[in-house]
Image 1 (cartoon, rainbow, N blue to C red):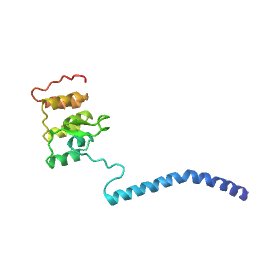
Image 2 (image 1 turned 135 degrees about the vertical axis):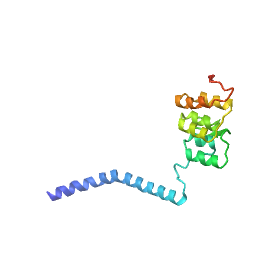
Image 3 (image 1 turned 135 degrees about the horizontal axis):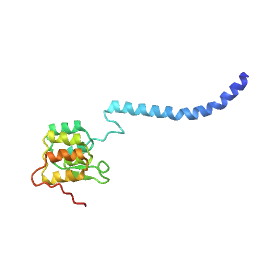
Image 4 (image 1 turned 60 degrees about the vertical axis):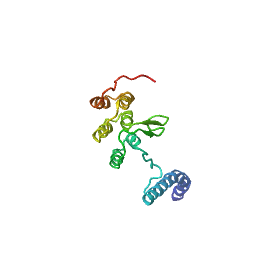
Length: 154
């Protein structure tokens, strides 16, 4: 009986190894990634940093927005947002329009609190780029003179 159990165990060993090795190798690879992150300070997979204030708003990174504003970046200056973040192609938006495009009322409010004051054209683009009711209600409270709530389809 013992020899029958040993024979069965010997047949299972290659199957157990085939099932167990991939997760073990994945765990080891992840530990290497974490070690690289600790050593370099930059994550090799998720190291996407915003290049400007509009992109920081599009990334929903309120810390980066606050740091950039504290460093003197203009809240009303358009910036390029890379392809795939808001639209398939890269686009140039003012930060408040980028926040409106991602339908993030909290980011719109943060930008307004920090002093964003879009002109009529920038305000209208933000208004038209978002269909979120909470974003539009915030924008409506800060509508500049001459800004229209009418959107023309492209």
